[in-house]
Image 1 (cartoon, protein in one colour):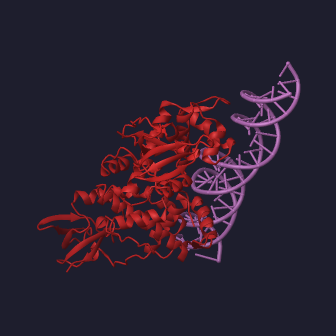
Image 2 (cartoon, protein in one colour):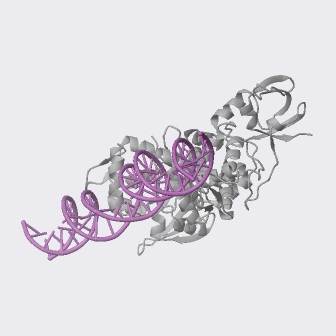
Image 3 (cartoon, helix red, strand yellow):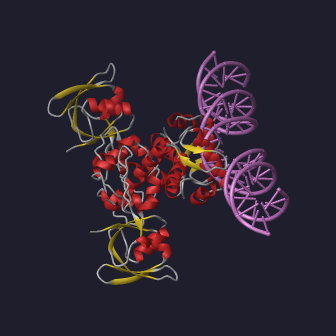
Length: 220
Length: 220
DNA sequence: AACTTAATTTAGATTTGTCTAAATTATTTT
DNA sequence: AAAATAATTTAGACAAATCTAAATTAAGTT
């Protein structure tokens, strides 16, 4: 019922990785967690023994239903703390992730549920990601990536896929954040970069790499 | 500069124990931390190597100046979180200690200083213990124990020395908390128990064991 | 002062999470 | 399909934090 910090980090990372691809590989996970493939294999055996994931040697792995429940609990804690840090303690958007990485491992259920109530049961964290409720339910929030948005259509930034310090710094500089309204004005075939309008009349350019990481939900 | 959860628990506990007696013994510490004397000895060697404590085999130990600074940092975090839990999340007096034991090990300085500011730089935690400031300064707060209070003198409960769940439950039942006004009406020599008045006219009895753990600061 | 008892330390083992290097299995290329 | 390459797993080692059992030191008693 209670997991070590290390186990929790593995579970959480597998959950995020398996959203994009159905199955997660040893090398992928080692890369993400900045550890070695051999260490990943060791941990996979342990998590399999605890019935948190499906795993056969050389076949990759994915979380079981139980494993996903554990992951959603960790993500709930992480995102509630992020919301707290931004909303109450006035941390900036790009600072909250790192601190929440530590706080998320304090797994007292009463603490988290009371924190949730204190914050007014927020639906989304400061990066626009949905916060699971006390039962582990999470909003699907069908989002598309910026490159898929049609030209000359007003749309709303609702999240970023990658939350490294680098991307957050870049977005901050370009004055793009959750809730920013955008319009794609031009798409350059040569490098797949985009010319977009933010606010009323600011025109800026965005690389393909960056655009791939910006999530959009349509506005009316 | 950064210490493991285990090291922090040892440092914190030594700090509390050495207040009562000048030097802390292996058995005392093992008892307090629910571990074995041999484990204590191992950790003492490590903390000595890190210059956090003075220690010669068979001679007991006490924190160095550096060790005390580390301890005050941990205690600051613990008490700020206790204040947050009671004040903002509406935990009761007797629930906060356990949760704060976990939160205290998140040692991000910016987090703690912002939390401090958010809470309005509180001076005391919900048990009446002083909260060290960002520089590690702590109020002395010369308190006496209930058995030393003279008869028929109104006085103020300002803390408890022992914060086990058992004592907090007992105090809750007797409706004694920080800020409660008391008057000692009678002292029974046989068992050193006290008859006291709380509030306007409630008369109750308190054992010597309990009285020893109640800290008093005089009222006008 | 010698003996007994209590406290403390040492020695050696265990668990968790990690690592490197070697072996094995899978995949890709020719 | 065989050979080369890449991915993964196994084997064996290590550091941190703990334990038990045995040895050592200190303290208390007769």
